[in-house]
Each structure stands twice: as C-alpha cells, then as structure tokens.
Length: 113
Image 1 (cartoon, rainbow, N blue to C red):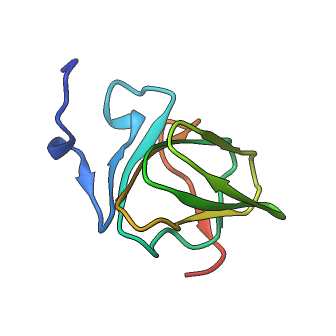
Image 2: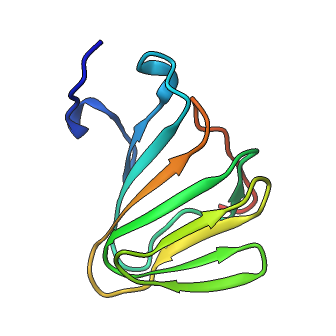
C-alpha cells in the first residue's frame, strides 16, 4: 500500500479531487478536496451517511436542511444522513474545503442541478 498520495493521483472533476476509500485498502471513508471560484458549488443533494465539511480557505454559505449557515475559515459543518444540503462559495476569493464522507465510496443523490 502506498502511504503517500499526491492530489494529482486522485480523480479530478471540474472543482474537486475525489478520494474513494474503497480504492485504497477499503478504507471506511472518502473525501472531496474542493477548490471553487466565487458563486459556484454543488446543487442540493443527500447521502445515506454523515458528511463533514472543513473550510480551509474562503467563505461559504451552506444549506443544511432548513438552516442557512455562513461559514468562515476554520469552521466545520456537519450534514446528518439523508439531510438535503449544499454550499456555494459566497466570498470574493477562491474557496478550498474538505468534504469528508463516512463511507468507503461516495454515495449521493442530487435533488437539483
């Protein structure tokens, strides 16, 4: 097993690098390492497990269930299982965050684009 990975070894979509635990020794967690520009973020979605967000750079507005949350660097957001949630980079600078999934693979259902 390789104990050190570069983000360049992870699968990249438009705004995030994805780590799937099942691809690395069947680890019981996965994550997205997210980099977004102002005004962008994923649409409303759910997971059958908790998701934990750690804001590393920038500012974000989260929707978790009925709550609207303004988040700053160093704050953490927890979305409970099966709770609709999303975020948007609501700042003026690039956003960086970790989106940690309590599952060996990401399982998500989008409720809006």
